[in-house]
Every structure is written in C-alpha cells, then in structure tokens.
Length: 367
Image (cartoon, rainbow, N blue to C red; front, side):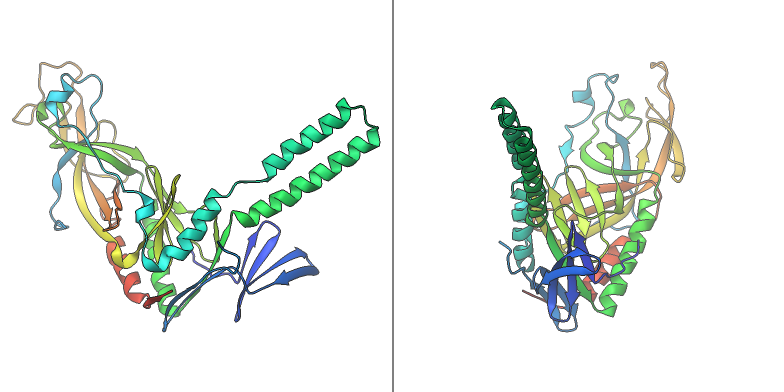
C-alpha cells in the first residue's frame, strides 16, 4: 500500500492541481485546458503545524494476558438459550455527528454538505424524456423532436458535471518527510493485517451462564466478516492513498492526520491523539474449521462436561478447535467503540505503536 503523493487529482473532466500558491482547477483536453485557482482544500503538514485551508466555494488490559475463552453466537439447535447465556450487548459506536475535533470541523461540514447535496442529472434526465415524449404526443416535426432530444442530452451532461463538483470535496496533503515515513509504516502494518485469512467485526457479546451448552466458552460473540483494504472514501478525492477498515454500519478511513468515520447519516472524525487502541490475544472456539493461518491451541466439544470431555447426552457432539486470535478495540472519548478480530496471532500487535508513532510525528494542529 504505497502512499505516493500526487500533485494533481482528477474529478470527472476536472483536474485539481497543487502548486506553491495553493490548489487550482482546470478542465479541457490534452493540449488545451482552461483553469482557475487557487481553490479546493489544502492540508499542509510540516514543521510549523497542520493547516487546513477550506475551498473558496465550500459551503487497558495487559497485552500478555489473554481473555477468557470466547465462542460464536449460539445456533438455533441449542436449548433454553435465554437461560444458558446473558443477552448479547451491542458493541457499537455513537453518532458520527459527535465525532468532531476542532481542526476537523470545517472539513467535515464540507464533506457532509457534499453528501447531502441532491444529484440534478436524474431530474434533468426524466424531464428530457418527458419533453421528447411531449413532442411525439403533440405530433411535432421529427427534426424538432431530435433537437429537443439533443438539448436534453447536453443538459443532462452539464448537470452530471455540476453534480461531480457539487458532491466531491478535494483535499491535498503536503507531508514533511517524518510524517510521510510514519504514514507509510502504518500502511505497511495495515497490509499485513489485511492478509489474515479471517477478519471479523464483533457486533455484540454476552456472558455465558451455562458453559456446557456453549463448548465451555465464557463469552458469546456475534461477528461478521469484514475488510481492510486500500479504498478512497465517498464524496472526497485526495492525492494520498488511504485505507479503510469496515466496522459494521460504519467504515473507518485512515488519513495522514486523522480517521474519518463514514456512515449513512454523515461523516465524523477522530484525531490520532484521541484514539485509544487495545490489541491483545484472545482464545476463540470456532464452530467450524479453523482458518489456515490460525494458531490452534486446543480442542473442545460442542457440548462439554465440567471435566472438559464430551457430554454423551447429546448426539452429533462435534469436536471444535480453540484458536488464538488477535483482538483490537478502537475507542475514543467522542464515541468510537469498535472491536475487530484477526485470525493470525500477532499480526495486529504493531498497529497501536504505529498509530502512536504517527501521532507523535504530526505537527501541532492549527485551523
């Protein structure tokens, strides 16, 4: 996951260019381009601080101690589920509108405005169809219908270009050498984490009341597969590569200076200095086969006796692997609360110190 810093960003037919005077925009074809500037957004990160320049037209537990053995959510075949375990408690972040630090407010306001902006081209498209249909219904000459159709197509293209600018914020980063190196190391660690055969977002967990029905696990979890990959966030174009972590209904996008938290309701931000990370090993009982890169540290039974042996009262009592996984909790005072699990033990251990190193490399923030 390289972080090559580009000097231009393309948004549809428009090209935003970074220069010494700021950000300019041009449009055209090779050999002929018309431009204006400076405009757009510019984040300068150097020895004198982080500066955000808005567009001119913008509106712990010890890591060495594993948790008690956990297990997956119960299946429908288990008896008296309400008695064998406590209700699963949701592990979920708060409202992204509350995840705002002072230096992010202007940027978040602009991205949220882009997100809320209504696209015009579908309206123009249906109006054009109605206009062409009206000419046919009124028995206009064929040439008149063709003219109305061409005008409608041109209007739709113009509306689409307008939508492209209205719904896209452009942010340029100018990083000093220390910050660029720290951010590259973060990408390298994220790439290793993405290589895990199993990667899950933990949605809820609850204590077990009767372990014999849950393979001897002390905690039940509801989890779903998730992702870490190189991905650009919606409504934003930037000149630096970013990566994303899926956490249920929200997606965390890691930028050089902060995390942007996207969901359907809007966009929030968490500064690296405010992010709390807790990475630790955990034992997890898989109710199927273990991922190929998992470290299997033991075996148990789907229905287990107090001595650890199989409970003979149950038929089809399968033996299950106990795996050693990495678990990462991401929290912040502004409401971020997410839990992620990796099948490869030790792969996430470098993530927390890498984030801390990036936070130290960042200069003081100024708006």
